[in-house]
Image (cartoon, rainbow, N blue to C red; front, top):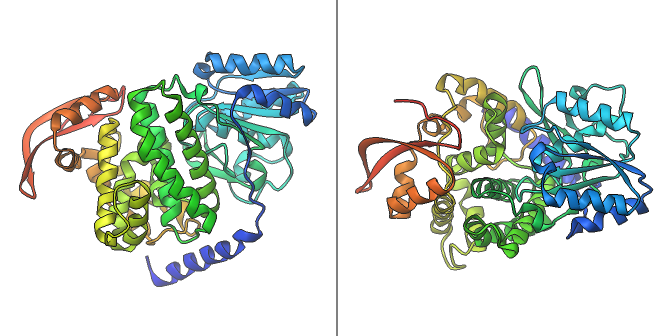
Length: 456
């Protein structure tokens, strides 16, 4: 990145950092059970609410429990259950039409980040004469909104705490965020029973999404004492509980801990922002519909290693929070321990290191899109432009070349295969051996569920 653009980015970020104490950030009121929500909405004068969710979540017992509680409290409800992964402007418009037609007075989003973002984007109800595309960016909503409640069924997106809704343009497939303080939900219902049906591979990828939020918020240049505290707490909770929930989905203690971690990571990155991991993951999601949590999990170690020694002191503190290094370890040793621990956690939770959909010829355009999203807004520790983002290692993500490092650090290829198989990954093996640092490991490629790896 040239010196003039670098100065502009840092000046822009510096201005936002100085403004943080003056901005109206707030935390949603936390509820621990969906049955508590109707009472709060009744106090706000809601006679009818729009419930935004997906077809699968609409069939969950917890959703029925919430709808029954609304009825018992005398609150009418209208169900919109057609949200999709990476919600589009078309689904938001459809939900908005239903909200207006049924004269709803509040909104409840139930599900993962896609359903919660769709619910938040129905903010268009407060701005009926502006197309959704005109609201992309920061501080463009401004008006107060109807009561908004978020009921996460995954522990990862942090949408129950954030000022943003990420939407995909139905025509261009570009992703953009609508960001403003009225989008912070009034209520966040952290009910672990709502996450019990989450399968292992989604438990893992959404947990890695929360971890990415915490890590990027912590290593950035716009942290505050409270965001640092939230990020460190989230990292500790995730390293202590993600594998537990992955191995035993009925572990309510682990599920509740992960919901808390997701909430605190969301609070951290709402103020301190994210970085290039998210910018690249958004590009991948828009281009190939790759699940956001999985894309973050694959990209996170790539970007952290690309930052190099500039992030070692911060990664060292994260390593201590995760129980991977003691307080006496030097920053380089502790930082590398965190990177190794990250690889190990991914392996134990069946998360691969490849995105087979990624085409090398698409990388320049993906990098340009990530550049446009991240710069100058994201206060990253090391600035990169599109040309530099192209070189961080995305071709290796396509081919899965990180696998030999994966196996070497885990020590036992059989354990890695077992974890990947448990996560629903389809493995396609080559029969070559790669030697690095004196260690031989069988190389392979894999894909997320339902995807077929590219040949070669």
